[in-house]
Amino acid sequence: MTQTRSSEAVSGDGRYSDHRHSRPLTSVDPVGMASGRTLSGGAAGAARARRLAGSVLPVLTTLVAFLGIWLAVSYLVLSPERREILVPPPQQVLTDSILRWSHLRPMLRALLLDVQVSMIGLVIACVLGVLAAVVMSQSSWLERSLYPFAILLQVVPILAIVPLIGLWFNYGINGRVVVCVIIAIFPMIANTLFGIHSVERGAHDLFTLNRATRWQRLTKLQLPGALPSMFAGLRISSGLSVIGALVGDFFFVQGQPGLGTLLSTYIARVQSADLFAAILLSSLYGVVVFTLFTALSSLAVGSWYTAARGTRPGG
Image (cartoon, rainbow, N blue to C red; front, side, top):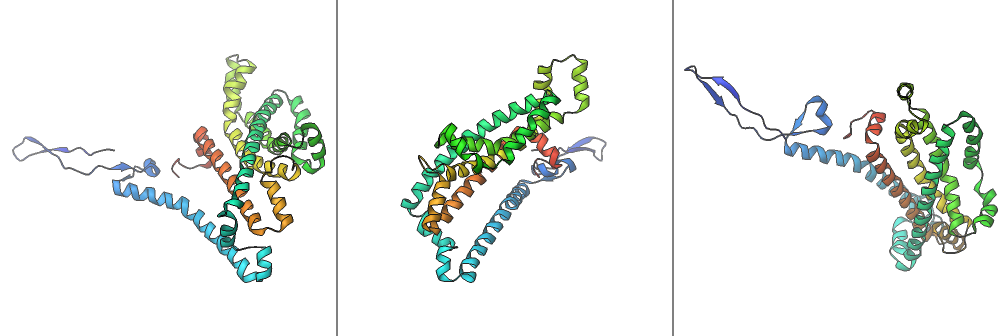
């Protein structure tokens, strides 16, 4: 907050007099700091409201459009008999499934299991992915030898190795975590390795002139420089870990059921309202996970993130 100071002027008799013109306090608009724009308190509040509306309104518009399309398909495209089975309207999903505790409770218990599985798998995938990328970055021979196997983990059909995973890690929570790791690890390897290799040549030359050791070069130059790419990989892997938890539920049905197991059950029993409710719940969880890790990425490497987008922090 700043307040303008008065200017001195010469009076008629030759003496200096100080004419103070009181002006209201002004606040600097963070979006327009580079141009020197200032806003009063009310104008600053209006600017914040416009920015908030600019963030919320697109989401609300998309949600309303989605519900409108859903209702149109239910009532205008499908007959009443097919509507109950194929696409029940949103109000029916709400009343028959979400607002009924006997239907919602098993979904929440299954979601809690998927949260546990996906977060454990994500942590393991991040640790192993970063370690693998660091090892490959130390030698071009190691990278050429190991990187094809990282690609193999990404492209191998999970269904083809499910029997092996079940035999080696059992068909409970351990097998589901392994599926999460296999699905989520590749973005961490690829993005971390890319970030390590993207450090500027001049920075390497500076470390060479100062006779830095390999460990010093890695910990003080390459890994800090790779942070933006690592967090980009983390955002991708966080979403893939949720998918991995659901896929593991489909394949490993022993023990406590997850959302994937419930989806299979609802499909077999033609419980369309519960099926749509479980799909919405799993989708909402995926959006929350991705949003949280995106916010964490912005907080951790905000300057890199802003420079990469070419925008100001408030933009």
